[in-house]
Image (cartoon, one colour):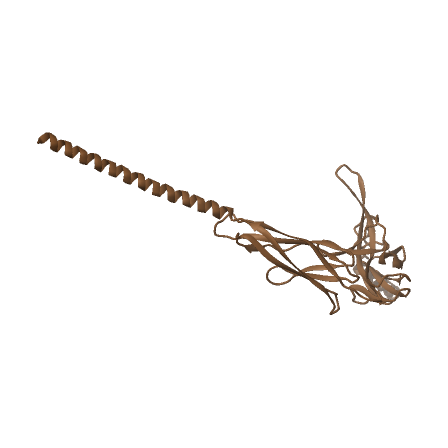
Length: 344
């Protein structure tokens, strides 16, 4: 190879090596992964959320908003709505009068019933929109009317979402789901807890076994006749039983738990109903009444009659058997005398 040829190759060598290096680098660089397309959640995706009392900065751990205010006084409170869903949701905010159900659960009037008491004292934004996994704090105001009566007044504040579902024939039905909390306002003034108990009665259910007692249930009507909430308990037999809370003016039909009782023709039980003002040492005057119910031991009477008839039958059978034996003996003696006469 000539000297000029060697020099030409030497001059091209760096460029050739650089090109190979670039090609090798391109070969080992991994391809960028394709970005997965994420579809937004459907508009009718389920919504889960919570509503709690809050301070201006966020939830404060309370479960109930409670205040004691003078007539004509007002106060600003807050609630927090947390959207746990994967989509944005618009919540309707409402306030309404509150009450306790027969099972002792607090709830608020449905949207088709108008409030007349503490539910009308609360002003809140009609609706808010909350992004996925976001918490929104909303202020609301409680304004006590100048003519509000002293005592306890209950309301509820809720956030609701309207959803639709199809029934069996494909008809779309709208459903309002709501979550809320209790707002209790005590208006300053003279407190007068009072409990009235009426229509006390008892029901006895006999047992179908001679060796097992029947069961006794006591029923009565409890009325909160005062102006404070009352936590009601009663004692029929044994330990006191909790009957939940009654708001002023509320009435509840109460049935005691079944207790064992033997049928002794007449059963007499004492019913003691007590009521305390929650969070206070104040008590309403207790109610003590006596209730009487017939508990005729029909099964035991039937068994006794059956046993008596059996004894009579046995005694009668023995008497008849003895009479037949006596008759046979008498006949045998007569036969013996006749035979003796004939021989002689």
